Length: 231
Image 1: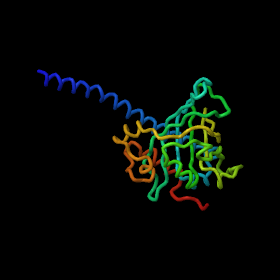
Image 2: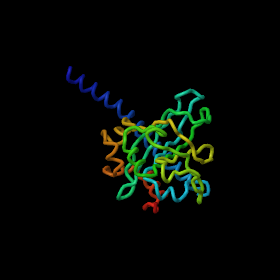
Image 3: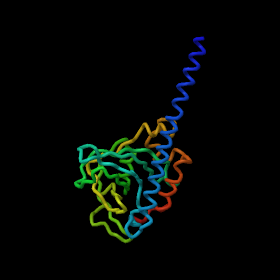
Image 4: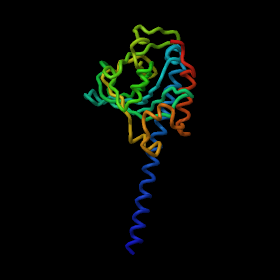
């Protein structure tokens, strides 16, 4: 009887965890879909999107859809997203990341905003391979230029490791994210991949891209052209 009770309890616990895992995986799939849609919507208006020279020269791309800042409360800025890096055989499988903290100098209340961060050089790539990086301190970050033929008004080609953008209510523009911390989301990585994969190894292309992530990685590959522009 005790053995039967133990078996029934185990089955009940398993039955309870399956819906929770399904919900979590659905949430991650939705985030990948939102990130894909963000890139597609931005690139649908090339005259106001990311310049071609930046698309061609990018080392890594981070998309954080629906980034939120709550009611002007200090430290309430928080968002989750996905990132992929250029490898010798295309773009890597995605990693899941968090962006939090910082004061932007502008107020959006409770409105959600889509963010895109572009790592522009080898130092930016190395920063992405870390578990955590503070923009403006550990890695230089600049508001990115926009437009088909836009030229950056700063020396980003020499110094900026990340170019940062925001998209809110259909408007897309460069944005300063100094003071925010970009870090690995280990819980989401374990949920998505089924194990605690090395952050660096995934971004270096050592992990096959899961089917659920292929639309996102394929969209990045489509717009952030396959070969780097001459630097």
